[in-house]
Image 1 (spheres, one colour):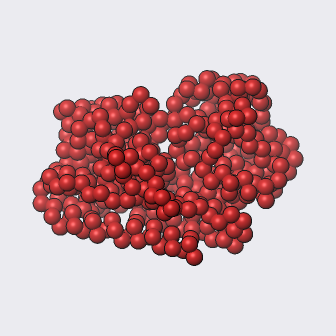
Image 2: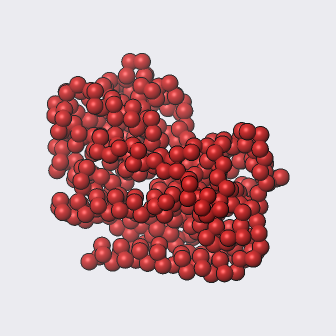
Image 3: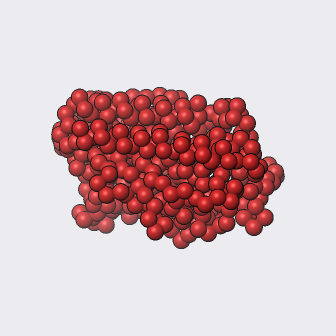
Amino acid sequence: MQRRQLNWSLLTLSSGSLPLLQTGCASRSKRRGHVVVIGGGFAGTTCARQLKKLDNHLEVTLIEARPTYTACPLSNLVVVGQRQLKAQNFNYSRLKDDEILVIHDHVIGVDPQKQRVVLNNGQSLGYDRLVVAPGVDIAWNQLSGYDEKAAQIMPHAWKAGPQTLLLQQQIASMKDGGLVLISAPENPFRCPPGPYERASLIAHYLKRYKPKSKLIILDAKDNFSKKPLFLEAWQKHYGDLIEWQGLSSGARVTQVNAASKEVLTDFDTFKADVINIVPPQRAGKIAEIAGCTNASGWCPIGASTFASQIQDKVYVLGDAAIANAMPKSAFSANAQAKLCAIQIVRNLQELPPINTKLINTCYSYVTPTQAISVADIYTPKENIWQPVAHAGGISQPNAGDLLQQLEAKYALDWFKVTTQEVFG
């Protein structure tokens, strides 16, 4: 019953409150302006389409280098052959129907003073407001020995696409009795429960096809998202097939040697057949080019507006933003983008920003047919996104197969509904 009530609260907040706010903004929109959105993921594409829904007088341009977007949610199922990579691919044809100009090119410069964006083809675009939603980039060489060349031997697969297929191929071709090693980084990084979902699904594959094998997680943290639920699932489904080691046991990876397929921790050296390095990350490069990052490599924002705290008339969304307690997830990015679009329209109309709460729900597979989840509601307080006390929750411990199968269905339903809303 508590879970049902929580889900109803989340549904009301996400499907009821925001559309009412959107209608209010759209009806008052009379002035024109040009908003340029850089980045065509869940955050940027949602924001571009939402801006047009709120104010059809706005000129909206989306700049995304890739003509096809490959979504990360559910891509761990691709790693173990339970899903095709093409099911993760989406294009931008529907944005043209919304009268949004879509440009497939790289942004090589941003001039916040002149309010202009420079493209690789030499084109220069002026803007009234700029939205930067570049996702994450790998912080190459922040982990000693891990660079783009090393990633071809020790794949990160943290950007869905060729790396996903490379990791899939390595696991499929590994001999029975081999060792798979996953290195999980310190926070923050994209999809905090992602390494542990991946470990679960790889363990399921090994148990079925390579039962003499083993998987070790070397973690730079002692705690991680949904840890009790993951540990419970691992014990139930995989026994001693998965071994997790945390920071307090000296498991933080400090160096890698791709040539010898070894990783070094504070106290030990590990050699494995397949090594999946989830590396340190930072905001996408264009955020740095736009001058929106601080010393952390991420982008400080005003919590309720997502306006950059460094550059005027620039907004930062999704994984690149410092959203405090809100995790770097596709669900968060989608919710943030809707609110940001409202704030931009109101800002162009010289109206004050609204103050509202946002939600995040994150599903993680523990087998190909069973999942667990966490949900929270967040509110901006003193310019920081903080969780609302007693408003969130995680899946019920010892929930049983039926409930976890339902959670897996919910995960698929969320993906279908959200990608249809964003790209369809």
